[in-house]
Length: 133
Image (cartoon, rainbow, N blue to C red; front, side):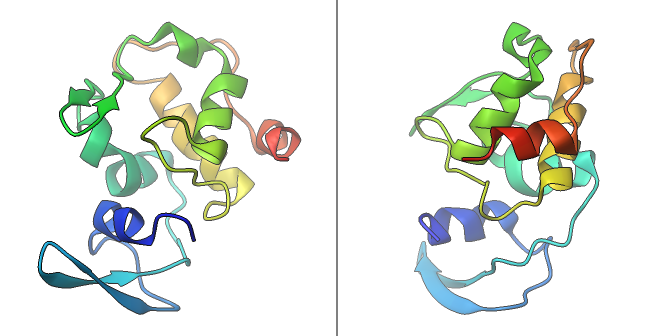
């Protein structure tokens, strides 16, 4: 896992721990897991994405630039969003090794249909499978 501490912070206590190592972040031990059992797009977003992209999809700037998902025209293209989730981009770590095809598709469909986004072609597990290296 390339970003174990960041991943642990993003997950918080939402995801059950299967294979656990302890890491220290901000002076406290946090659990690191590679077993993600969440499947719904909204719960995946809440557990993995909203810490940086904000609960309203508005994005944030600070230690990094986390683009707004709300009203984002790039989300009309599911291949774009799938590629970013699977491979990462700039400050965003890749989640491709941690999420199954259906999970990636679910979170991308969620962001494609919220906060003013109305993509005509929505993400699917088949599109995710095709996008993987």
